[in-house]
Amino acid sequence: MNGITSVGVVRASLRSATQNGLVPERIWQLLPVALEFEITLPQGENLKYAAVQGDGIGRGLYWRGLTWLGGEFLVFYALARNSNLILDIGANTGIYTLIACAANSTARVIAFEPVAAVYDRLKSNIKINRFENRCEARNEAASDLVGTTNLFVPPGLIPDQATLDTSGAEDPGHHTVEISTTTVDSVCHNRNVDLVKIDVEGLEYRVLRGMQQVLIRCKPPIIIEHHSNCPSSALKGFLSEFGYRFSLIRKDGGLWPVQTFRPGVRDHFLCTVS
Image 1 (cartoon, rainbow, N blue to C red):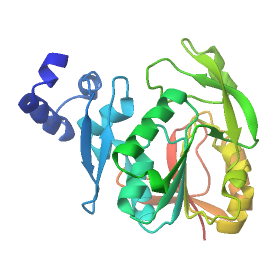
Image 2: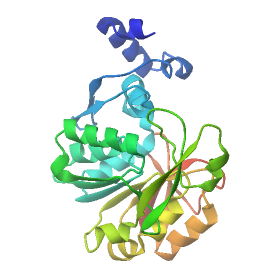
Image 3: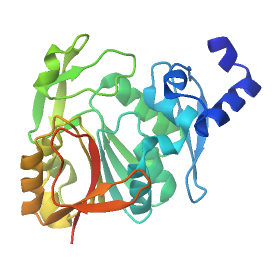
Image 4: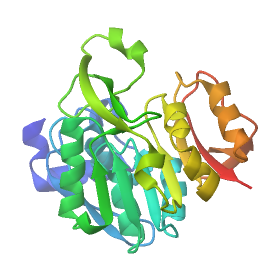
């Protein structure tokens, strides 16, 4: 497989076929990607992404393109184009950080990523795009306390589902590392936050508890990934206290107003104050 995809013409044809839905996911998920490539955003803006061995996000972006990110990408992109300070919480290798900076030449991003190997890829992707002056990458988890805690990390060179959720402790292959935690309120102080993206594997509620002053003061739109292990009723109740309403993000980027989150279901939502 490595030999086949290393031939430029073959790789380009295979990539085109995959992006047109002609190659099943079970096949392209096995195809290696270890190279730097360019991504073009809907309004023609460009960014670079450096994929390495074990980078599942890089694989998805290379073989499937931006549609692989789903409708939440379209919503984030539209909002980021008019946002000055954006928080990327659970930044992973940095694709949303890069999208924000490429979409808006004046935007600044604070990106939180606690896993050391993943954080290194985040920093590398920021560097190759020369976004260092506009990105503050933090090797820590945003939570509801400033201190340290244990993070449960799945196997892999670039793990993409590390979590503070203790239920992950029993999963085969996971290992525990001690990491630093902080709160959005302590990081942002009096800065005006315009947009927040949160994807922290079910602990979104704890992130929100640590950013209450930002919610009161700035009322930013929040794009949140609701995981199946998320405490749905607590999350809904907490955000409702701050005046937030919820819209389910469809695959085409459309919004469907809803009253609450669906327990046990992985969905993406846009939360706004009306």
